[in-house]
Image (cartoon, rainbow, N blue to C red; front, side, top):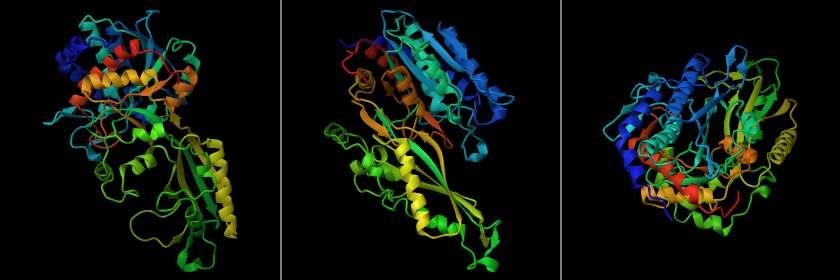
Length: 477
């Protein structure tokens, strides 16, 4: 039986101005985790959230993660609980309260830390969509239930961190430690820290690609050389590097490293069927990239390339001249940087070994007297859940109740490592439930969250808690 949600929805509408003011106060705190000078502001944002939650009757505990480096403490992780009824399901939600750096002179139309609402009800401000708006959505949902005198149908567990934009340092260990403690009652996990595929149709996300980052170094001369003096007389590291990097991927996106595609899971009919109804056009892609330089001409191939197939991207060359003008230098040492976005069922260690074998073989073929080094960097594993799990079916019902449309089931090409950590450590299904749209410009200038998405998103989060409270538990992770 579908829950009766109209009183809750009306309460959210009546409190819209108050919720926007809450977002305004949050955006005004420049909680930039990447800048040590702003660490007090990051802690101030934690204080703000704790005060908002405790004022509503939530229990909040702080977990301190130690020092980032001598003299600089990591921001606290806030662990919250609203409700402690053993007869109810418990849902664990995650979000982050830190933000990317932002300066007006970067190109913002308005002060990034002053919420500005334009004539189209777009709310501009750093952190509005990533991730302060969604985090406040959970607090808004609690308050709307409380003011409408509607009992929250689940026990709500919360994990809000302040270092997501700087690598979530210390969080994995905390989740591991708390999996059988603070999080032990969790029946499912929900994360709202991503975005709709487009701007008009909501979605649920059930998969993310992983990432394996690499460097390859070529060195020779003891110092940078003048090309007019030594050009043609020495083996140039840059030439060797370009030769090796040219063997990694072609201009149609095909990875040229032998064995890489052997690990990729085949497309199952159930997955293939999901692409048919997804609200995405090639024009959406063209708008996103600012050109028509797409590899494929159809949406299905494009989405599969972005979501469920691996890709290799060349990112840059350290040590090479890259400033304006001309400089006739032969670099003594250069490092080429590239990454592979991994997908089911690719094993990071196998990928690393295949890359190592390939680049070393290709360098050996050059018969160069330069020195070559393989430099593996960070790795994040891919994640894929079941879109038929009761956590997802409950969320789909909530989205349809609020937006009047069945959400797309999507995957994403990027990585959110904490998703896999929660799944592995708690053993529970993880759902990605976005409220912002693809046009929100997270991490960029003029980041925004549409007022409609914020208010209707608060409704979705609350409705999800009602549907997930009674959804039959028919399928595991």
